[in-house]
Image 1 (cartoon, one colour):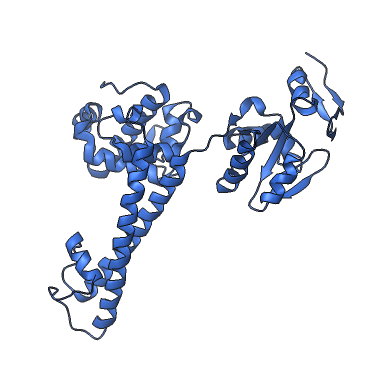
Image 2 (cartoon, helix red, strand yellow):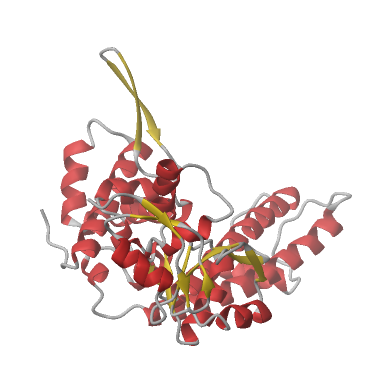
Length: 356
């Protein structure tokens, strides 16, 4: 092993900060100091892109800032995927011919535990994580899926509000498509209404809510069609009974790269379906599921398990063997967890579903 040695190296673009030289110096040296390969670590926030080549420099997270960074002629940019604020610069640099790598937050968390708290030269650590980073790829399904889920949330909120308004003036709070269309036009001729002081105001509210609901549902149909068009007909997830193109598209759009989950347990935990168990001596108490993960995936797997378990041989077998011990939501939650494991196995190994 090479003895640690602190040294400063000069590159074609200036002097870097001192770094610890180890047996991996050849890789670090090539990226940090070579003229042919130039790596730039960037810490991303809403307003700034922060680098520290020699000293900490803040660039605006806008077009002017991107152009200033490109003047350094980086060949590789390494950054942490901080949600929407990292997407635009990543895509911009990629389309300008720069290789963009992203370091998983989990990897950075482990580095933080090893190296200590985040410092002003945090991006230098990013520069040294080239081997642990993955190349940025834009996921078109992600934007469509987030839009679909956003509209779905709006639909639920307006539907709940409409049911509330209908309860105030009618004994019938059931909403069919035909009734919704009549309510949107202000046609209350077939409604049996309570003639109360607030009835005229509530009827206006019902009309507005019904119109917005119809528009939202139309947009949902359009976005759903776009999502289904993005899912290839031969995608391996479609081999799982009960999973269609919409469900597969939502899973792909939310998860992104399934390879970041090395085992089914980590994927189940990401979905918030992992069981919470407390132990005290010999006593073991189940506390349900953690619900720490993605709420949309959790709801999707629960819905698919509840509605389609009979179509999936593996889930049906699980249902038959556990229905006497588990009841109601507990049984369907266990089925949802089982389905999540099936999805991970099929997708991670890229092999069609086979009943077990």
